[in-house]
Image (cartoon, rainbow over all chains, first blue to last red):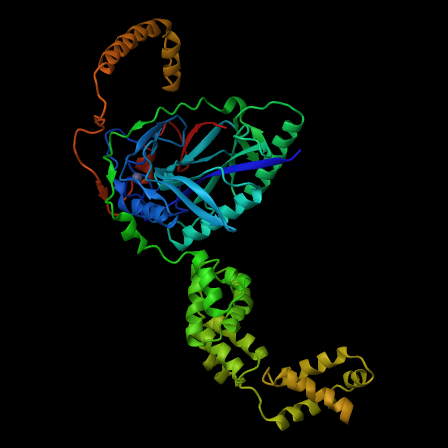
Length: 474
Length: 91
Ligand SMILES: [Zn+2]
């Protein structure tokens, strides 16, 4: 018997605003506990929330990018529940009248439908100390940070597809500069609804909501676990109920919340402190001009315009800044494949090493273009170029200047190279004898010595030819 | 009705004595009675009045303003621990 997994996601994204959703407190991450709070976000009596226009703008931009219908009028609602991280005892959210409905985002050629996008406010952060289990601590800095909730239809058919959707969503939101979508800092969070049904069965199986998914890896692992758990129960004919389960990262299982789960009776009602938002009929059209070229379109364009492989295009468009850098470098030196190789190879290596982003380091696109040109024109060898890139990366000195200062211009003069080769052979009689005796490994050592003596200025291919020529000819 | 009052009290985290429960039961009865009268009025096609002021799009610029000092923020905390609010364990 075949089974099918059905998954829908609820994604929460902290919007990249400077101030909170309804007050002027800062949203910056990592500040001292309870230093970014005020009477409004602490839920003191008698205060009045006022909507942050930028938060609305970012949500609208997202809605347009994902082909949603923007509501003519939308309202905020109070969602009432008691939990210590919620100082007002209600969360301002949207319920019956969300900001946008009915869009989609494509993954691997499949459209995943988006049911709705709405605005709300984040809750505080709870800390449960290990050493003393009698109390919890609260930091309200996160309380009131603008949160955008994106809900998909149950269109995903595997844990892998769910992760791919999340990664694509994150990539798009970063392109749009709507959120930095850092799962580590909690600015992208995800709950998943998952059910299993017999293939071809109409309607959905019993749905389980999985919470506490803090990384792409945990999303995948939790959903794999939950899909196989439900499949096993179906095969065994054991009934199970609709419930919320928590992913336990340490044990690698989902656990029922059992008694801890309170009756979901949020008693939503229209928020009396906030008037409705009304959007003009032309809002979608005018926002379209603000939506940048999104990853998928850019991937396709890079393949078409620059002749890149789909793999190269995928890597270069992972982050908008990298794609921007690539296209700028190509303007300085119009050899796209070569520029792509430099970015994906040596530059990516340096970025990983120093853990920095492409727009936070000194090698400009112009410098990289110049470096690629110098190699291509035979002015410097590839070996020297790698060193130059590292020095430019470390010091910010222009590659042309590094080449000049360190006298790295390739030795073009064949007789000059030959002199060095002769010298190396004379100084290394054992390696030379090994090479003559047929130990091919020895040539690598000899070439290395020549490169060292010339400080990378000899062309290693020519050196090799020269040495091999000696063996045959001399 | 009594069950309903108990449920509402639970949702609102209010502890009620039997006597209070009986009193509120009567009050709620009256309120519901009144509401059921209102429900008889023909309102098809009438937009609900969420607000009495006909305003939309009241918003502020995304500008950071001064927050409270941590001392002030914590002044009314039932208990504190360093710069944190301290509450009975919730997990
Ligand atoms: Zn505040």
